[in-house]
Image (cartoon, rainbow, N blue to C red; front, side, top):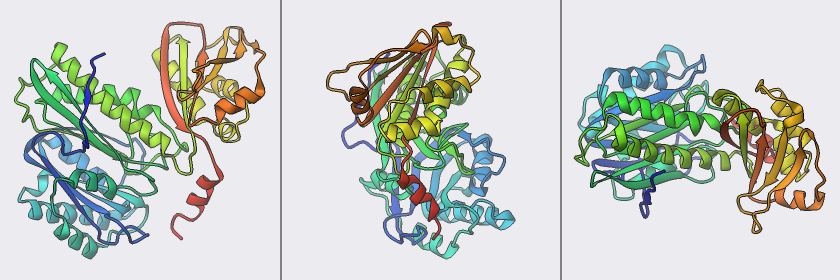
Length: 410
């Protein structure tokens, strides 16, 4: 693995050629904080994207998907508070108008603007507020951080990162911002995520690298088993690092690893910030017969409400892990199964065996309960059937999750 340097105070505008800004226009139900944001590139960007597989798709997503397929993008306009989903033909007209207003503000063609929305489903955008918000956005050196805050809904913290690397002696940067805390069980990428880079990347290779990164990061997180009509992940490449365009090989692999590292940080940040969550859950499945089965098993365990509730209650009921594994459809031999508990933040870094060779293994329940109380809880499940492995991330299930989602619109 290549190592990358974290950019101090990094944000989505850390790569060369990008600007961002945000404004408060009252779309968010709380009525406070920025809720509309713009991301802009000085030059046309090679762009790749992945989108929800949900059969109900929001108007902004449908519009953006068409534009990504058509060619280069220059800008993104994103709002929180209203998803503009299930809003019929009028919702599409609102999405198109939003892009037109942003294009006029930025001096680019409307077809070069992607639109992304997040918030309540089944509500029309208040276009007077959107218009005022776009007019009120000013790009600034802190605009990247403002962008990350403006797309938040029930998130408690912004999710952003910037990493710097080098290809053939040429420095490049990959950065990203994302939002998500609920309706997290993606089958594409994540709720809303935007990644920028100044590395010059061939369009086909960018799509390939993005699909690879998504498969091991965003598609391996879960909060509540629900997906969204608006799930969108965009990657924009300005090419201003002036490297030879990447098409693969060693240089392409370096970029792909940087992209995956940014995706990993954003995805795990979303899982850690799940609605009402107090603990991050990491599930490592080893010894599977296929990669697909390893991934399915890991995500099934991480998404099990019984596992999540046991972690919240610090209950070392490892049977929850075993039974979740059993319904994952991963091929296994119960007599070969091992289950371990540890925590990434444990001072002793001790790993505790809960089940070995398909039978209970003696362990100290008080110590196991203490491990489950750490901020990061790790289950390692060894199938001992093959050589494939995968890791998934989730969070505990708390009463606060129910409270948040029982009063989302009231």
